[in-house]
Length: 259
Image (cartoon, rainbow, N blue to C red; front, side, top):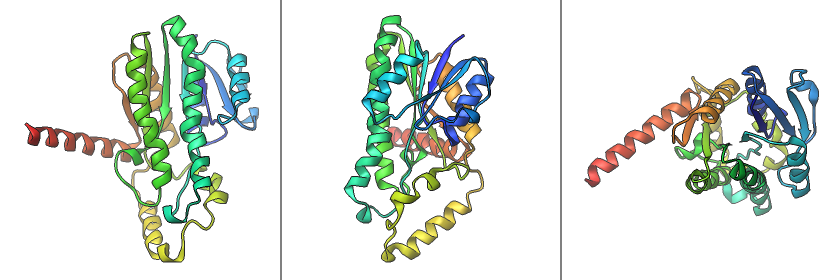
């Protein structure tokens, strides 16, 4: 039986991912900053461990307690919505500490055991904001785009050891605690000058017809973890799939023009 360790399992994508892998017959280590075992099925094959991805000691303890892991799912992340000019750099650094450096730290913690076993997979969950520009999420997008480039390079350097790196790019999902969890740090990030513009953006989000669901992300992560090919990117959710397809068409068109 294979084992997956999933970060950020207290709600949303992470909780759906942990439940899905467990339902598919895997051992699961569901991690969260404040453990809430009642959120997941009671099972000998599903454990809940405390993990703060921004704390080196917490990472070391979680890795030691988890034991051998076949798949790491870096899902833990912080949301941020607001005008960049009003966003304190301290807040930007907080976003990067979790979304970017936290992901990198977990990869660094697990790569040695995978390299020695010559097997293992990391699935880094980013965002469809990396597929097409979206307003008022500049800092958040930067934190996720950094992981896109990081994973592209990491996949190449780990391939020689039989270790794989994958990206899952979820679309917009209103059914997560993205906004609620970030409400405190987002206060004051929409100055009056941006009020009308921001209202239009909110209305656009409210009219999304095919938004991403947590189960869409869980299924995409499952596919990414088990796909035997060299495929790097897996869009999650109808809106993200549409953006990925549009990006692919643009790439083909650009290549044709260059030729």
